Image (cartoon, rainbow, N blue to C red; front, side, top):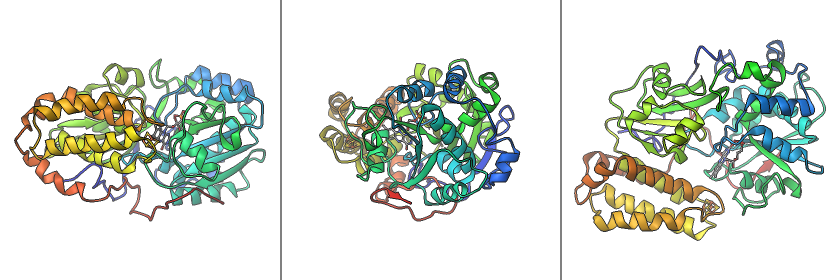
Length: 445
Ligand SMILES: Cc1cc2nc3c(=O)[nH]c(=O)nc-3n(C[C@H](O)[C@H](O)[C@H](O)COP(=O)(O)O)c2cc1C
Ligand code: SF4
């Protein structure tokens, strides 16, 4: 049996796009690294709207952050632009979610699109210095090579900074802390980075996919951007789809595409789906009917879920949602930044409760303990990791309550087969055969 966290596909993932978006973000060349000249010939680095006009175009386009929270990008950029300088802009390619590959794809294969977006947004907010924070060695090398290309216009000083691989390392205050030379661990908010960021200065931390949309908006306009997507979630987005689908991979789709259509694009399902792990861990475990949901922020929120960073794992007939929840919780208990009591103790307790459910040792008292522990964690961390842990368990209990009850005092065969995963360290989905990750503090070059 495969596990979504411990056995991600290691072969090259498929890269494809919905016909309606013709590879806005993925480019036409598939998983080949674009050249500076190629990017320029395709319409990159050309003049577009600048400054306040660009910020207005981003607002009109309705661009929302692709890093997880779907925050309106124009609001974030303006909040920094309105503060006294110096100001900074950071492209966040931390990509801590193990089931996501989109940001790594962009920094490795579309470095010029990323650099163009970063430079345009930096100019628009009056930042002379900008950073790409990246936790992928190959992506960092690709960006550095691209920055040396003479096609890159001068004006904004861009530095590539490598951070450690880890679930919390891409959280925005962890990114700021790492750029300042500290550990990549979150700090208390407020102040938020737009108030006090890198070097204590106003800093916009923006996901790398979000910024990749900026050159498209600057040169093609807000109306063109809105030609795909929904009114409240305009544009296209990158979906990392894995699990029980025939062709796991990275797909560019209009926002609002039903998950079932995305699965079709990925060659169809592999057997009967039993659940969907939605959006990274924040979106929770959903029943298979979730395949009918539109992949758009408001629709998923209304369904009690979230698109998050758009990493979706379809669970197959051999996978039990209880075992998958246990695995994810083991990962969070291991990967949290060990700074906050409720997060450290809470994730460990939820892991133990889930594990006892998985092995058939749980009782009614176990269910009651879930209900007691979760409120003690909600909103109690420096970052949202405890909230992610609670969202996951709450979704399991809400959507698979009868299944969880069937585990009381009774071992489950699918869970027993998954037990072996828990003893092994988690791996991330890879675009290529695994490369050695780095760890520790951020490294500047
Ligand atoms: C635990 C945790 C981990 C996160 N990891 C990432 C990450 O790896 N990459 C990312 O872009 N955002 C991550 N975020 C969200 C960032 O804090 C921030 O909201 C985001 O980079 C802003 O970009 P956006 O507005 O373009 O979405 C994480 C948030 C949390 C709570
Ligand atoms: S809430 Fe958890 S992951 Fe976040 S800073 Fe605290 S200990 Fe670390």
